Image 1 (cartoon, each protein chain N blue to C red):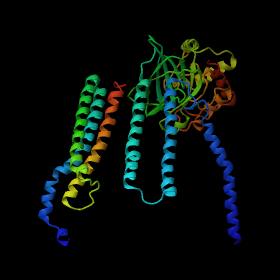
Image 2 (cartoon, chains in turn yellow, purple):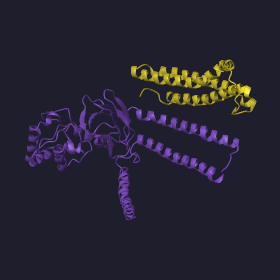
Image 3 (cartoon, rainbow over the protein chains, first blue to last red):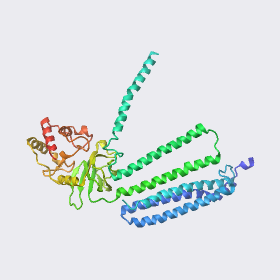
Image 4 (cartoon, rainbow over the protein chains, first blue to last red):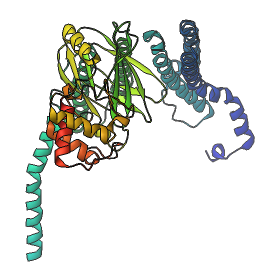
Length: 134
Length: 340
């Protein structure tokens, strides 16, 4: 037991390097949501201020929203597989082992991708329900 | 001991004396829910949509409150102890994630779908309103008009027609709001905002500036009248006329006071040499339903009080108070009252 707890720098670094993808996955969902939000609000604001063609911008942003949703769904799916709740049956991954941490990061990324999915849908709704700049 | 007793009695007495005060206060607050300026007293298509949204949200909020507190009561009183993990998780995911998402999505879709309605184009009449500190500059542009009918501090609209508002502000941000007829719209200096209102019940309502705009923000109100279209047309035609000439000697003396005190430097009375643009147009002030942007009534007494104590009635207003004799004030009020 005590041997396991002894901090080993090299092992930590190795694990961290391995989990780099997991950490990216955690931020990717909210990052897509944030980018989608900024592009939607910024572009519509500039379009309305400059009098550009809002119809075309709307279609373009509709396409961007579809891409963003696809991206978040992909992150969610990958995170779901990493969590592995259906294969391991372990939901909370209480143990401190490297494998447990790996599953846990998948769990967290999965939950964040759900929030991001809802966020992207909410941000997209005005594109559907409000036609123009009025 | 004695001191303590007295203190306690004092406290009790002061508590009791607060009861009528609180009752009075709540009555005053409730009086604010009267008919003139209430979003619950629906008199327009747009207000109806908002009112329905309000009631659905209120009932929904009460139901949610009952559910949350019911659940709390259940776990604390009726079923204390450990929850089965499966059961608890289902409750958390269902009540904590799925339910709020569904409710918020439904409300967002509904709310967003209401927004375009208040931006549907008008049926012809355009009313330009500029928010000033602290009054409303109003211009009516009927369809095809080349010049506006200018008025102030009163909005009249034909029932059953959608009127377009073009809103501006002079120095600070204001917000235009007639609760009985629809939602608010902000007024910005240098940037025009637009929305439309469709009143469907004739009546007299009250509008209020809904964005803090300075010392007399609370006194920046107006009377809004929804009229049958024929009545409205006749009224607008009368408003387009020049001012009525003074009808009697008192009014003529009043007009002389108006001229000598230089009122015309700030106020316009069409048909006279008073052409000032700083303050409200007074051409038909005598027929308006309020004075000083909803501050007082258009009676001889209120007119005289307004001219003599403007700053007391409307703190920091640009119009100075005039130190006039009683006779002069009475004549001036008489003249203004006659501008119908």
